[in-house]
Amino acid sequence: AAAAPAQPGNAPGAPQHFGRSAENRPTAATGLWDYFWRGLTENYFNFAGRASRKEYWGFCLFWTIALIVVVGIGLFIDDAMGNLEELPAVTVGLCGAFVLATIPPWIGLNVRRLHDLGLTGWLFLVVFIPTIGWLIVLVFALVPTQARENQWGPVPAGISHQA
Image 1 (cartoon, helix red, strand yellow):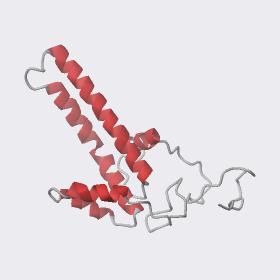
Image 2 (cartoon, helix red, strand yellow; image 1 turned 90 degrees about the vertical axis):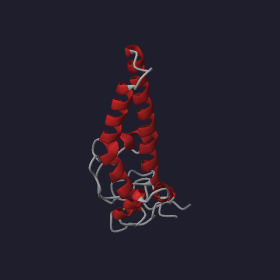
Image 3 (cartoon, rainbow, N blue to C red; image 1 turned 30 degrees about the vertical axis):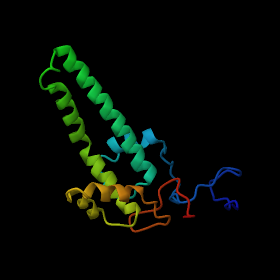
Image 4 (cartoon, rainbow, N blue to C red; image 1 turned 60 degrees about the vertical axis):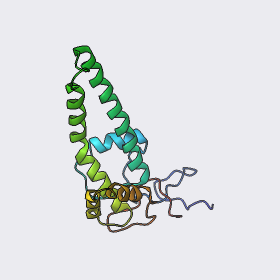
């Protein structure tokens, strides 16, 4: 691949980043944990913009890990209290609180993921179709990023224009 021409503000020999916004602002970290943490903080109620597959699956990975930790803590407490014979109330309560607390960022992430594909976020409502709704959302999550700017913003960081 041919080297991209140097852009103002880039040091000679620095790697070129295609698809990022042309604005001169520091770029956010793009590690999987960073996507999860930003989803719970900066993007808690964010339904605008775009989310790449990496952002989507990074959030899902650490959400799942966090849920397993919450279940483990709940089971440990329920076991210490002798609640495992009946309803493990602490486990159910902690899991319920965790899931309820993470619904807004999860919906926002799905809406931004649809925007990334060039689709309206309202398509997320297909999740309410019995049986196949979740499968449709899964397909949307697996489709590659639209490698050009669209009406919802520039291409997410780290995505090349060669798609």
